[in-house]
Image 1 (cartoon, rainbow, N blue to C red):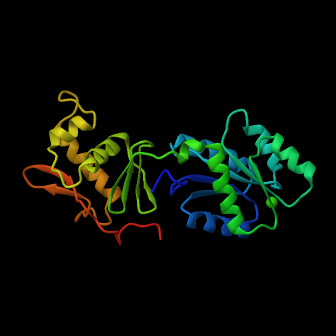
Image 2: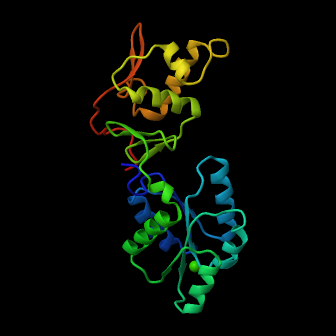
Image 3: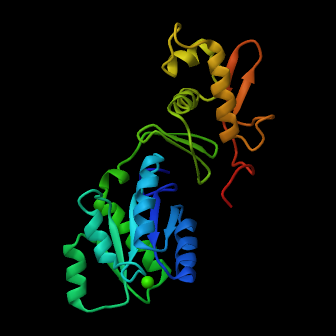
Length: 250
Ligand code: CA
């Protein structure tokens, strides 16, 4: 699923000060699978950019309202451009060409003029993302197991439409298991695959990673559906899982 279009989990920062407008746009973008953070002011937008970056979930695209309470969208854009090269869709209530040109000069990638349809919003966001980040559309190496998807190219994992927030070790562990669903891996094999070495990390550490991974992956970690224990042997990922009714974003 990943790779053909921009798929679930891409992070959109929606900068819009009208709460009802923001709420509607957010709901529509989320329904398309984007992860959406809303900022009501330019100052808030700047902190969101930084916080998202620091948290390792950087903003992939910004939808930016022209008129904000503390400063204009253009000023915000001008201020962040040296540091942030993310694609931007500018939203404006003013439709004249001068504004449009100004916006494009300042580095907005596209425009939406109010009123616009939500379908148009989603179409523009997708088109801009494709143009600005063609790499996001290149076919990724993705392993699928039921509704679990492990994107090796991006080192991200999705369960349904929910992105799993995995540590590098947890990701390596999951990727190893997902390469061969149904195959049993010993703790030592998993330790080696996850970059551990016999001196620095014990096989017991694998159990800890598995337990942490289950908390993120399983609707009920006590009776896992995905990451199964094989007594006396190790662990395996259940093959051929049907879509789960467990942990979803709906
Ligand atoms: Ca506004």
